[in-house]
Structures are given as C-alpha cells and as structure tokens.
Image 1 (tube, rainbow, N blue to C red):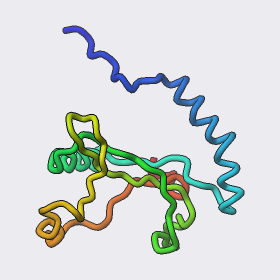
Image 2 (cartoon, helix red, strand yellow):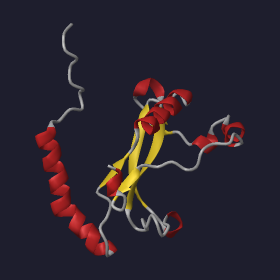
Image 3 (cartoon, rainbow, N blue to C red):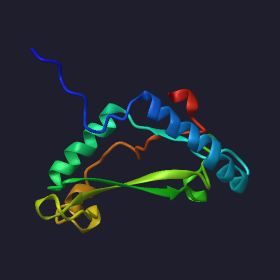
Length: 137
C-alpha cells in the first residue's frame, strides 16, 4: 500500500516555527504592551470540538469555516480565566454556491434555530487560550 500523501496545508515544522517565533518577537510584545499583560499566542481545540464543527458544517449545508480574530470583553472574563482584552478566534460556518461564495451562516437565522435552541446542551465550549491556560497543552 503506498504511503498517504501529506495534506496540502503542510508547510513543515521549520516554517511553522519561524512564523510562531516571528509573531512572538514582532507582534506579541506590541500587544502585551497595549494590554498591560501577555496577549493570546495560541488557541487549542480538542478533536471532539473540531468534529462537532464538521457535523455542524454538514447540518448547515456549509462549505467551510471562516476564522476571524476578536477580542474578549469584560463579560467574558472570570477571576480564574482573566481574558479581558485578549485576542480570541470567532468562528463562522460558511456556505455558498458551488463553493465559490463564502457567506457566513448565522445560526440564529436558520429555519431550525428556535427548535434547536430549546434542546438542552452542555455549557459554552471554546478553545483553550494560552495565556492564561498554557498548562492545558
């Protein structure tokens, strides 16, 4: 059996580390100075979390994910998770015609939203932000 080819998004560990180090050297200090504390340098998602996103893409007839940068507000922070002002990722499912359009899917605008929103679910799930939770890695 021939080996499985590398994924098309593969850039190699050397390039990956260069990009991470460039961020830590050039951007992180500027953000930390502005915030008065270290800013987010990474976000970790569990395999289950990613699998749930893939299921939701299928449910919505989506064609991908759009990942935007956002900033946590005071309402998002707790004493145990002091993230106010830190960079975060905001994820939307996208869909469009023949994969060419990539419009955000707004779950609240979907026809089954009211019915789905009544179903009890586990608490809010997000990626693990580093800092403050770098030990989760």
